[in-house]
Image 1 (tube, rainbow, N blue to C red):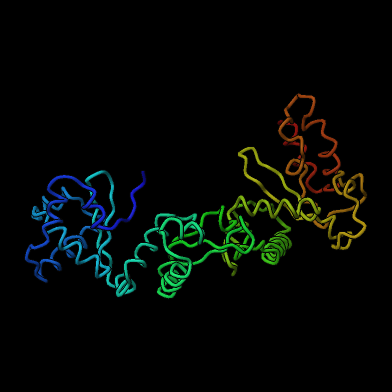
Image 2: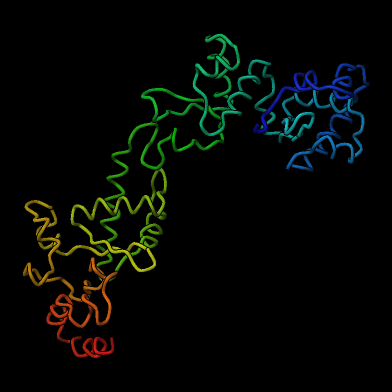
Length: 345
């Protein structure tokens, strides 16, 4: 089982041997310097200390360890995790976080530990009541106080309309709960998606002289304000929607990377998409009769869907490509140099 935060008394009561006996004998003299020394020892080991490392550090008296740990627990300055049967992990809590726990009662800690255990998927209100055994009004009062102290938070879940889950304040919700980039506060972020589409299209309009890669787009979007930053894969979904609207052309390189060019046919037809012939938009330009604003932008090889099958001497080859021949006819200034290269193929 995964390690979880625990109540020291409950763990000690469930253990056998000298550890539980030490807890039962709580008459050990406790001094303030002992508490602070133990706290500093744990603070110097942020990864946590086990029973074994405590003994090696001079804390061999288990009764004293339990007494000191119990005092720090009551102050909210220590967390204890059971990593295996009979083996505990002690971790110091910094003063800022400890201040948030100060004054909380047992019910608060029980609810907090239950929410903490739920991780990035959180726990429903009903599940929280079932696991803690608290009444609904008590659970509501406790969670409200924990939220006020910024120890836990409520997150809208896309799995149920209007339903919320509780999780730790600093935990990033799982995508199955938050919905990922395309959702905000449990709702599909239509306006955010449309804003991304517009920004991508504006960037493509300003890059008509070259092919744009997914990395170029991602770097550009990272520099723009917004509620979140989509990944390269998510941006490719945005570009796919623009490709289906014939606003951009997309091509996959031999290495598998996606690249995009701005569709000048869309501009020449008014840029509105009204009356746009989807089939004609996919035909070679020498058949549609439309001239590109810049002939150097659409080298046939970059956009050819058969580039993966093109081989010298093959059924589909550069020397017999009518698209290449038409492109060279439209670019007479580069025809001579290009023919030389084609002859070398």
